[in-house]
Image: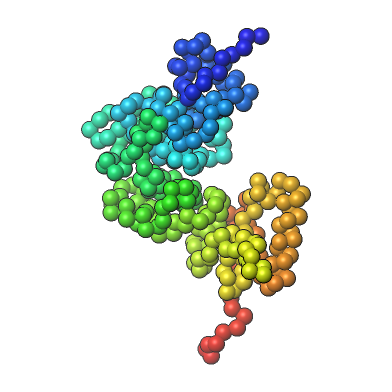
Length: 306
């Protein structure tokens, strides 16, 4: 059996062909875990650290120098993967733009656009020009579906030290653009402390239900030491909302046991714990936990006479 030579740096299919590798060879390497796909036609050896620089260097192998990487591809370079679950195994098109007055890319595997960008909107990473995190977040706030848009904005905020005010500052530049109404709605809600896309969905669902905003990543102290961290908490009402993702909460018996003991302690000390899971963002399941939350926040005592 012929041993295939794995490139030692980010590469494209054209680069692979120069050292005698076919597209089938490259995809076989992906299946064997020795190569990672970044985007359509751009690859990284599995031994190479996965950093913004290496992701950008791979993208640079397939993007024309006068084009700017935007939207979901830009987010990926900035460390935020906003692809859908179904897209993770696919050759997703690169998303690029040409500045107005120039020709957008029509190459196979590239989703080319035209954008009005100013110098402050772009930066160079690993040899490729890409929109900066705040511009990327605002663009995604316009053109992704609402929940995914909010999750992307929060993730970029977390990774790059952004806050809601940064998004609000960008709004005047988006006046009249398609999707700006959604961006305007989401910008003031951006919360960099949420730690996953589904946590962002949870926070957005609470907002959309007209309920007060909880404190993210709230620590419970025992004897003065931070002991339990809650995804979302209403400290004074002693109500918390937890999103239970499979990876962090349900992969092992130890995880399940820890969560059970932790929540038993919380309930024994007067907390109402509302657990949200993967299938709880639509229909009756969504209505159920929001109804529980609304009831838990209703004060048992008030000083009002009427």
